[in-house]
Length: 410
Image 1: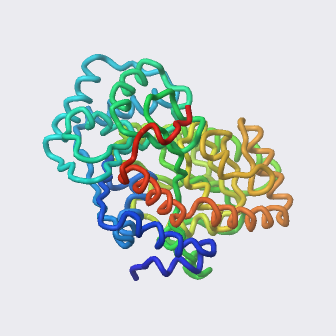
Image 2: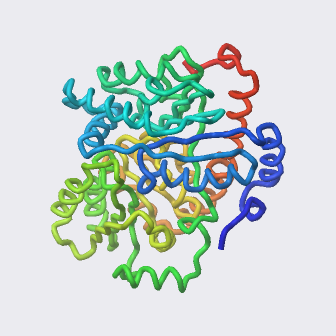
């Protein structure tokens, strides 16, 4: 059944909905256009699927467009993605030209008639160079670009500086730019199928359909199959812990239309798992929200052992279900996990294995961490806070805003 804004009063912090209603009065009737590279798969598409209708309910005329591209284009932008997160890549002049040509063609197809245009991540970033400047433009970066490969960042920066502002998920990701920079955390929707309450019976039914026994503690990592998510390291940590604590491991995830590398990562993970009957590798379609919800609720411990991470909303998803999370000491994971209070951050396989064993051997501590984790998410990472950020951004950038009035991070 569709939800409306008032439904969030029972899960959001007190006063959050009233604040949204007051903020929306400032920007009612104005228009916002989001542009990204895919409607399915990955956290950006998932957030936009929830934010767009709710912004419309608040009176902001919000639309969402997706750029079109060839396999070659998405191979190039995946190389950009890796390079911006610090992995050296071989990118030829032809690849740069293919990227620009795709942006040029999409600029001819799209209609940029909005007061504020939010362009997400590197794939459509060059649109700003080929489009009429009707409203304000903001580049929303969801990646960890704290230490990018310099050549790729120099190329992309040529387009980013043409925006009116940039948005990052953490202050450490901000770059030296001549435009204002904003900090906006991503969010989860507590009433979506992925995060709403499920009965024990629903959880059992879904796990039975997935072929997952519940006869021993479950370790779980949910993420796209991506090398930066370190699924191989998760298997290695599980194997160390299993020598002392019998458990099973589930690696659940899928791919996105703009990520051509995921198939090779899955093959590598299956090879490392080596047909261990207690390691379950689930390739889930993009709409497997109830399945992910049930897996997170059935898990004893949730991991997100990323080595690089823009934010990693699977951490907040698990914490919302009252689970302690062991995450990589990377990116937005360090904001979500309060060390020793809501979970642990680790920087090695051995560290992850140690914390797995500690939590399995101390269930009371694990339960307390999970309860504290849920409240941390309620206060900081729900969609109601995200909506307030966007309404504030719109007011700042469309009410006679001058760039000099807002100080950038750098």
